[in-house]
Structure formats: C-alpha cells, structure tokens
Length: 212
View 1: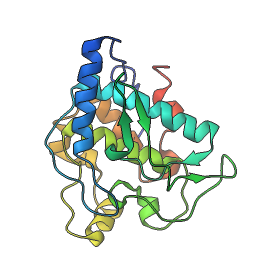
View 2: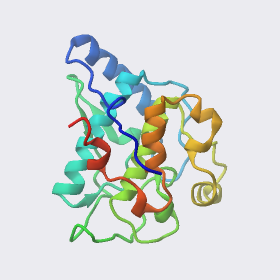
View 3: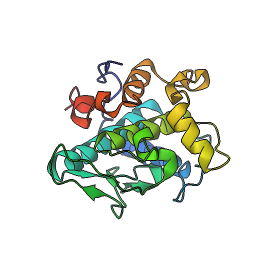
View 4: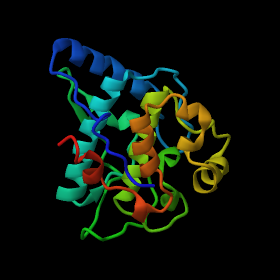
C-alpha cells in the first residue's frame, strides 16, 4: 500500500520538563511489554502510550535506524522495546548491536538468522535473504505495541505458530481490535511497513522525511 503522509502523527513533543517526564514514563511502559530475548512471546502489559509520547519515541527510533542504515550500512536485526533505551533527558537510543549485521554495500543482503523471532519480518522467518526492510517491519511492530499496549499479534503457543502467523496469517493492521486503537495516520504508516514484500516497504528516510 502507498505510504500516507506521516507528518500528522510524527510530531515531536515540546522540549519541556513535563514532556520529558511523560516520554520517560511512556517508554518505560513500552519496554515493559517487551520480551527478554530468544523466541519467547512478548508480555501483554496493557499499557498504551499517549500519542505524542509514542510519536516522539518513533521519531527518535527512526533517526537511529536512518544512521544505522544509511551511514553504517548495517541492519539491527533485533529491534524491539527492550532494545530502546531512554536517558534522563528523554533521549532514546537503540541498543544491543550484538546481532547487528553490516552489509558490504547498499544493495547487499544478509542471510544468517538471529534475533527475537516474534519481531522478525516474514522473509527472515522463512530463511530468505534480507536487508534494511526487515528492520522496517520490526519498527512497525514496535509502533503498534506502543499504541495498543500489547504485542499486536495474538499470543503464540510455540515457534511454529509464530512462523505460520507472521508468514501466512493476516497483518496486525488487519485485526479490527488493533485498528480500533490506532490513530488513522499511524494505521497508514504501520500498514505500509507491514507489506510482506520487503521491496515494497518504505525505507526509514521515506517514513520520516515529512518531519525532518
């Protein structure tokens, strides 16, 4: 699907003490929904982030991914709430680059499998070659998790359910329960990022260009 203009949603919070306080509290709630690693299912915390707080977090995550993809030519490969850190000034940083992969060229592909299964894109789960668009899929999961207060897929019983649901099942944005919790602009943004064809997903600069 075409990418809608993200500007109405991706707006920064004012640089005030109150805004920083809300951002810190909100991101802590987001991290609480994450997973400790491996392939286990994320926790269901039920803590939704205020729209402005979530938008601020997503803007900063996009900034980090843009640097990683465009300057370092690397794929994070394990983007999830637990790997987004926050300091006392309300600044978000991406962490845990132990499984990141530096690509030899802009169009290069990676093939090794590592990271947290529940946040992987379909091409990674299938064992196909992958590149930067795999992080864009994980970014959309992160965005929906913050907006919904829970992992956007139903609970997984085992690894095979993860594979079947992500590879063959409907997109999280096709779930009416998820749709009911999303602002229209965030729905459009996430739905574009959830394209199962990685070549049709927007890149991080396309997602964020309207607010830069």
